[in-house]
Image 1 (cartoon, one colour):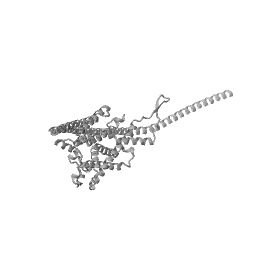
Image 2 (cartoon, helix red, strand yellow; image 1 turned 90 degrees about the horizontal axis):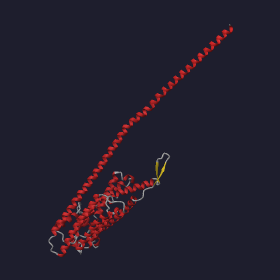
Image 3 (cartoon, one colour; image 1 turned 60 degrees about the horizontal axis):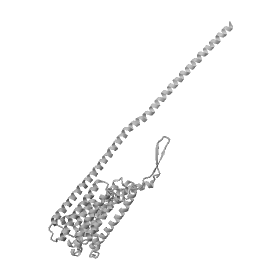
Image 4 (cartoon, one colour; image 1 turned 30 degrees about the vertical axis):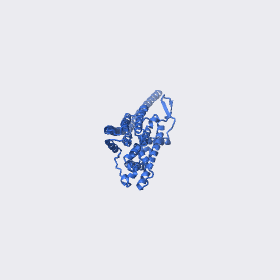
Length: 438
């Protein structure tokens, strides 16, 4: 979104009420055009002179007042993103919130929504400017094309405002959840001197569903706060400060058409404020977003200073001949800004794709290792389980046999000793009888 803000700010300098050089004017126009051609404007059959907006540079450059003529290409991009968003919303509407963050469909839905909203917020300057121009020409009810242009201009601006307010309340919920105190724990000591902890807030189904809902909300709206710190509101809501910059920037350009020097001076001061302000509060969580912010606003500031110098020179000398040299310098700033933003964006995207692929491969390797360990451990467990009954079954007969044999030996010894004693007793009695007869 930061790159879109910089591109919009540099491109909308074409509406500064000064005599731009030919090369600068052509580059400004190229930057403001979209990848999608403005096919809607081909349906306009109204005389162009009737549609010129009578104010400042818009009248000089013969710019149309109709929203479709000026923002038809941007509106097409927004409608395409909105259609994809509705398509993914229809696919994921029946899924549970807990599964949205893990499923591929849920991730695609969050990605499509972030593209749609970021594109909306990034083009806020042009959207606001052309909507105001259309609304101020309420008398252009010439045919169906002009009526539809007015309706879409009013509706698109209202929808953008509603989306900003809606996302703001969602961010408030996320911020409160991130900064709420965690559940307290109670500690106790058992008989074995083991410390046990117990949460005072027992989890239930309602709490788990609330947590899943908050996690999905964070996933969906992370494009608005992922680059900023979440400890303070002034950091967490910094994206809305950029939105305020977009609105103030384009309103200054539009309203100060009659005083070009003050017009250029005001946007120069505004760009300087948005360099000093984040440098003071330090809202950025990572180095890359911080570099992009200061780099982009430095480019805006330098271009604004050059246009301010041109405005002052043309105000003092209407025949000033250095506009082409000034235009070449502005073009060099725009080219540097575009190249650096493209390189950093592609590098960050490539690095994120590499990290995701690497983490995916690591997860697969870890799963394979666990699976191999389980497979190698399962036969050992089966062998152990199979060996235990066999050893016990073999041991029991041996013990019973030994006990049986010991019992037989003891009984035989006892019977043998009883036999001996019985024989000895009979022998003694027989001897006594013989003595008695004698």
